[in-house]
Length: 112
Length: 116
Image 1 (cartoon, chains in turn green, orange):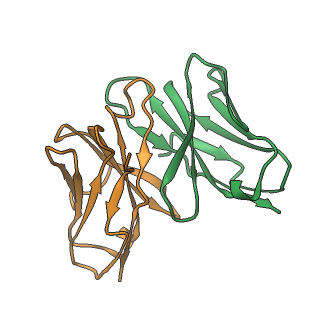
Image 2 (image 1 turned 180 degrees about the horizontal axis):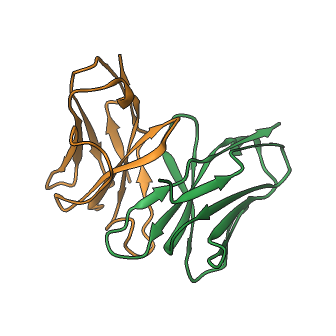
């Protein structure tokens, strides 16, 4: 079963708008990561947030983590057509030898 | 610095055949993980190798196997292929593994397998 579940499943916005994607998970985590995948390609790491952090920024990306609600959000500001891709949240559970578990992803379309 | 290299990029097989996929990690990375990606199931973890040992395993049948060599290169093998094995197989490397502190995975472009 999936540890992380993203919401919405698909998102379509106009260039210049902000895109907000959410991820919920079920059990305690060590860290949570967001990845992007362009059509049929490998995943690219975007940002990592540790369980003791609440917010992180990287360029136009802002990630928040609420461990009490077991949820995270990824905000992309001033979106561009090149941001069109699938976005995945992934969690690393606490404990040794824990693997990175991915959600099913969000398809973001940014219209020029 | 070269990225993660997967070969072949595309392949077509028929049911009952077997296939071997190869992954060369980033130089210095000792952990290699494999994932299967399908439209219906998303990204499913297959296994992770570290220093030639399988350290973690997902819920796949024994037809799926892998190994890692002393130079950290890894191969995965699927025997007796089924139609449902059609997928994008992704390899990812990291210095010591996803669970270790703040390690992230660097993915290859994937091997797209079609089973007819």
